[in-house]
Length: 535
Image (cartoon, rainbow, N blue to C red; front, side):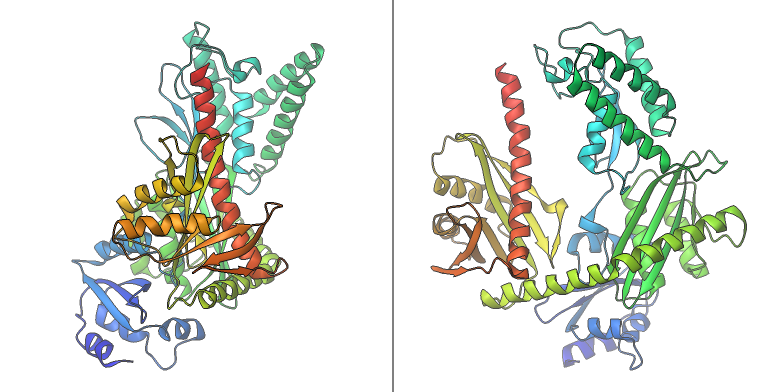
């Protein structure tokens, strides 16, 4: 412990607040809350601390703290600081997720939209959804096929493909009777409450009619929708008599890895299951306490009751119930206890089946991250951003930027850029994009910037930093060969060939694929909008 840290610890106030542990590079590595800052921070340096805490303490070089009026204020501040700084030793929801919802909008011609954001005036919300049964795009495709509401943000003057497929009533070309919308709205509410039998019968009728007119493509789509719905119904076989929304939270531990699980019941039916593995460095109680705060402060649709194991002290239990405005109960017998045991059995199996994979994945990630830091001669590497440009025949050019912190993709920090000028080369496009990027992010630069390309793209990015007189971070290009496969890293006028069989190559490829996926998805959306406007 250095003299500066000793002095700060000796003079910490004995008041409630938040503490921020920092490493030698002044990076915030852990955020915690305390009823008594002095007492809590000194506990970390207890000689009998466990291995997990020792790993964190070994990196502590400095501390910063905030004093607040009470522990409730500390709890809210801690959550905000974790969101802002995303410290490496705090657990946070995967990809900083807010779990997605569907919203049935209040528009004259309503839409059923997939969203991460809540606005009570927008319409009726269903969710959140984090079930492993459906992938996002499959679930969206399913509801689009079932409910013929408009898909376009702005109603065009001509019919579109959705109308021809029978997936839209066509307000662009038809006068829609409000009673038709009322019927569909009722079906949607039944659907999200698990009452799918009537919808399945309706789909079977549609499938039969499509087959009769030899529209086999549509008949097959409807068949897949029926199968998906039947699969969804299988996950609703644990019934409760309550009509309230309730959640069951469990956990399981192996070494210093923790799996947290949440089973969500809507109107007495199990609709959603969340399971996430974390490496944890605090006590189990504090780790799960923080997870609950992050999850429920992020999601507006809180249950009436959250059932948990007997885990929390009376003090922490009071903090949770006060700040989340919901009951938290630890059942000791009966059906609720049986369901909680079932949750924990599920989590034990999940951790058993995924532990070695998760641990190996973590080891590979740490190894690749450190190798990148070593190859590029970086004194520190905590944050990376990566850029890619997407277009078709030089039309509708867009770019995507993704963000990575300590090996995790931080999707809340992803950004999209529209290239509004007519530019003919990648060099010009990257100059344009970096001018937009630095206009907003010049004061919060990452440790590393990755661009899709080689010398030309890297030089373009560096030229913008030079023009604006901003010291650039390390900028590297991921170079592709003539077969359009990632082949090498370009930086500092050097090219380093990559071993395609190495974990390091797969690590870089994962970053490149993610930024490519993000930019291409944005391009497709933009190109579809342009096509509809031209029609």
